[in-house]
Amino acid sequence: KQWYQRRVAITAGIDSRAITAECELPHLIKNENVNDFREQAFMWVKRYMGGPWARAELKHFRCKGMRGDLTNYLYVCKLLLWDGENDGLKVLKSEADYPTKVTLKVYGEIENYQGFNKVEMMTLNVILAERHYIPKIFALFPDGRFEQYEKSRQLRATEIRKAEVTNTLADYLAEYHKMDMPFGKVAGRLEETLDHYHSMALSTHFEDEDKAKLLKKIVRYNIDEELDTLKDICFPCNDEVVFCHNSLGEGNLLLTGHKDDRRVQVVGCDMSSYNYRSYDFGHFFATMQFDFSSSTFPYFTRDRSFIPSEEDRREMIVRYVRRLDLPVAHQNVTEEKLMEYSEKFILAAHFLHGCWGIVQAEVSELQFGYLEYALACFQAYFEHKILNNL
Image (cartoon, rainbow, N blue to C red; front, top):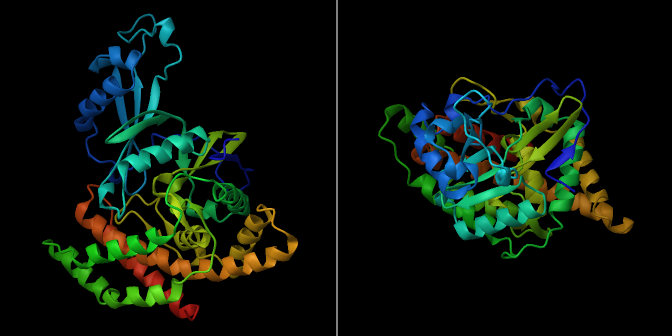
């Protein structure tokens, strides 16, 4: 089973027109001029991909930026092949199994993540690829990896709310949470990550006057002391500790396939770890109100009408619990527990994203309104906290 490519029915609410992955937005590419990056990418493919890639000359190599997430950088790499007339590369019969078009994922400023371990992440991705939760990996190297390429586009905020999609994600999480992985099986990383980003956010300073003013506006939300309040709300947590995705949301949900065979593909598994299972739901529900498809600064919008209702959240959770094959007597208890804790973890997700946004504004090369996003996250945090009496 390829759980990362679950089939999803297409309705009038999901655009089924032709998909292209190479529809990048400039602000989501590491360099405004992708040619600046071409020679570096060429060195990587020659060293790590082997086969025709190792024999290729720079004139045979093409590299184009893709729309990616807000942490890493994505590119499409392909070989210009001989067609009988051009000056393309001839692929030998012994190289027939080598791909000639791949996705290159270059890790962003990921070393700033608390507890980040590059060896652990590489091990994680190899296991997930073997279990068909992420695309096939052709080569791993210290700065990134080469993966199987498939045309895709990010699901839009308006599409993610559709029952076809949330049902698919409920099924996905039910399987993902059952995995037994060779990593630490305690949920402490969430608190550690909150502490880490909170500390880094409070120590961040900007020389740029506009950024300094915006940061001052964010700090006025009293985020210094609010973390203790958040911990009192969320911890201790009596929920099950399972292997969680930890980043389920718009930027990590793709639509792939052809016109009559669309599939939802879940990506962005790099931050997966053992965690409270309700955090995956809280994180997903928190991100549903943000739309990252805007092509103008700050490159996102927030729409409060997209905040899932209690009924919407319950429908997804009920679907998830039904897939766990629990005794009937335990199902209602599990549903109520997930409803309770996911509502609290919506706060944790907003707070974490807010602190993360402040830090990214200082370290990331991506042209994105990280501080504007941080402010929106803290606004969402306090609105949710007040409306739900948390």
